[in-house]
Image (cartoon, rainbow, N blue to C red; front, side, top):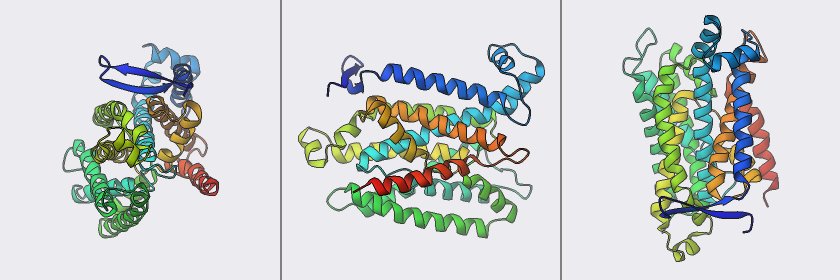
Amino acid sequence: MKRYSSRRLFSGRISFLIDKHAGKKMAVLLLLLFLLLTASAALGDIKLSLPAVFHTFIGGGTDFDQLVVYSFRMPRMVVALLAGMALAAAGAILQGLVRNPLASPDIIGLTAGASAAVVGFLTIFSNESNALTVSIQWLPLAAFFGAAVAALAIYLFAWKNGVSPVRLVLIGIGVAALMQAIKTMLMILGPIHQAAKANIWLTGTVNGASWKDVAVLAPWTIVLLAAAFLAARHVNIQELGDELAVNAGARVEWQRLLLIILATGLVGGAVAFAGGIGFVGLMAPHMARRLVGSAFGALLPASALIGAMLVMAADLAGRTLFLPLEVPAGVFTAGIGAPYFIYLLFRMK
């Protein structure tokens, strides 16, 4: 335990363990994130020089530079950042909660539930000209509802004198398959133009993101991330096992339910605006765990930063490597995440 030290918030009412060197490592992650943000602003079908981007960031730059950076690229960069943070944080919570390194929102069904709800929302509330007939502000609520239905089904079916982490994962895989079937049925029954749009979106993309999307997604994600950070100390207690956690005074089932709700909300917001970007919730927590250890005081924010970089890097690759074509970010995260998932399977005893 010498690697970790205790930190207290709110006059000692909340305490958590954190890696002693986590501050320096977080600073490095923030620097890498800023460099990636700068590269994302500079590169694309229209290339800008790095000095021009820096000048634009501090309020200067030509009108053309400001148009490219702030109108075309910055909204999708911010949506990618927020979605990556949300998916990674949800993955870290779920992996700690079920004590299984293979758990992630897309594998146990939360992403599929949110995706099915969003496809249904787009099908029901779109007119013939492919425009929404209701405010886009309802979209994350629809995604949250879908993810919540999936989470509730998983929780109820996994309940047997309490919720076993192993049962939670196995039931989650089954619920994910069911939600995938519902999503496919909605796409088949819906208008053909809506099905084509949904198919691209489900792969995972931030193309077409706007400041209106940011205005809805940002407060949703920030509030839930803050709540998740405050509740993260419960995850380390849950990792001890139910019996030890109860003996330590933890209210296991209530804490587990709270953490599932937070993970569900994070997934819902991310899926609503970035689609089904896969494997971020699997990869980012593993990378963060190697960097800052397993104490959630540092693991959760480190996972969020790494998740943001993964999605932003995937989006940057998708819009620069195959010009003039644009490849959805989810293609790149799946291309890296699927082999990584297989690698983890082989490593498990």
